[in-house]
Length: 232
Image 1 (cartoon, one colour):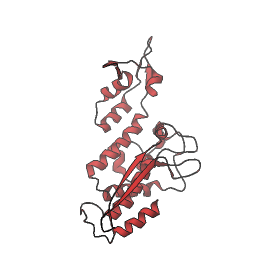
Image 2: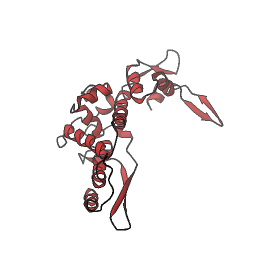
Image 3: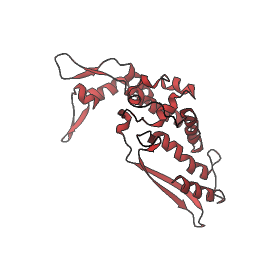
Image 4: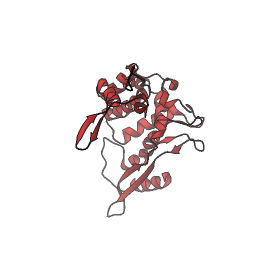
């Protein structure tokens, strides 16, 4: 797929397509979409250090002259369970370890995190390093891809913040209230950080987990949840 995209992109280089000076060229954007997608959708598995854990459908559009005019990508079937659980010899998605590589120290401050993957339960159940992957270099490639694709500084921060929020979210802990089958937070530091990065209220986040609103018939009711239900 990469080779096919590069071939069509090379054709676009002589297509005379109008370019937006604030972004990379059309051919660059098409090629750079790949490292951005791989950062968030690829991970180490037992058989492949850079295995794609999602499907993508790529459309490449041509104008009446036969030259490349635009492209779009549809993604589907992302292996969501990998976010919360990994086998011992596998790893979570590359983006987490790229950020923790400390190649861009300002990200650690922005996301309120350390550079130790073992501080975050969601990303430390399996491997945390891969011999064939340089996470520092890959972070710069991902960050550069965002620029070529035309992401604003605010949009890039938003992507990184949501990624950091997931790491803090995985550190949230709950306990059972005495004499009740109801969960309550066992400390709020992780929830506070996760909510801050998502731009929501921490109390609302905890309430949504412990007392979610569910639809019954035509009405919404508040449901109490036990510890296992909250984690699930």
